[in-house]
Length: 196
Image (cartoon, rainbow, N blue to C red; front, side, top):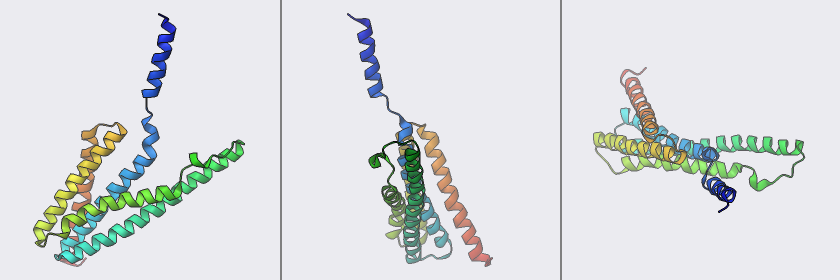
């Protein structure tokens, strides 16, 4: 048996099964950032409003407004960012006299839509958690529990897709989310109580 032929086949198999996880970084970053941002910012906004207004309508309206504003902001930010990258890559191809292959270039519209959808997917979690609970304390608890579960899932998902340590990633995301909600609730409660 030809040993060199066997080695070549093994090299080809190895190349075909090796995947460069860094290529996922752009869309993964945008999706995880968008969903996590939607989850944490909307939940924190709702917790802040909930600290001073106990009715469900105020919490839901503030959360909905936060979701719409955040999704628009994420979409616009991602569009501008990716369009800048697009322009740079086109300019580089023109300088290098390389044929411009538009299908290989990043799509600003696609990135904007993905960011808005990811943000909205995260933001819907606290909205749904609060929507059907009339009693104030139970509503706050249900938002915290739903957000905690979602943060753990987002942390684990980001780690799994990026082949990173799951526990550390989930813990980092969870701690950040809890901190944001606690600070927003506490400061808003303080301002509400003392009129600062």
